[in-house]
Length: 239
Figure 1 (cartoon, rainbow, N blue to C red):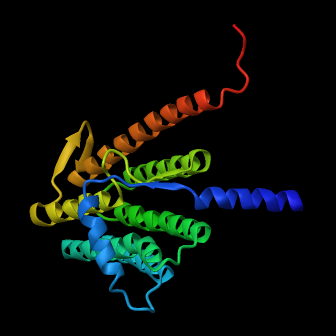
Figure 2 (tube, rainbow, N blue to C red):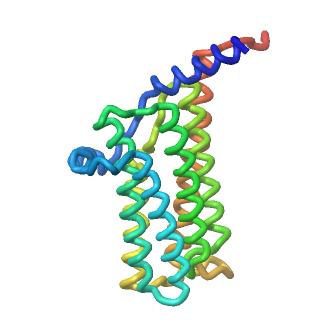
């Protein structure tokens, strides 16, 4: 029992000391804005409340995408959902750090479990809309979950929590989605065929996302494995 307690404390210490790496295009503008918003939140708004707001935003996105089967006007509801989701997801950690009420272990767990449910709702809604094939939406979701696994494993073995890749992070992903909504609303979901398949612009965006996720996953996995192999040589088969 004592050994389990020591191991748990050691893991907790690792989580507390992990380093967040967030280097994105929007970061220089987003970080001051989030600080400004955090300073103006009423006392009843807590990090947990904001995490709930981010999940609510994902529900709005899901409902909006479902309603686009009846009218493209609901794309604006989807965009509003992305704004709500950004507000809650981006501000919860900032508010905790601003008020010095961080709970590193609990916060890490709740925030990223919530993120998984949020992405599930978003991609499910996208796949049930008239704009993206359901199979492509599922493949994009699988790619997101694979990247998440790599991020969490890296946090455990290296103590670095990398939220961005190639200057792209969650906010950039939301901006791409909102831009797609706007294009589809004003110009329609034009189809670009591939052999016998009729694919919409959104389908092609989804394919691009899938390829990007797969590339980042493979490159990151091999690169990190190579680095860890040099740091932790262990047993090597003699030549």
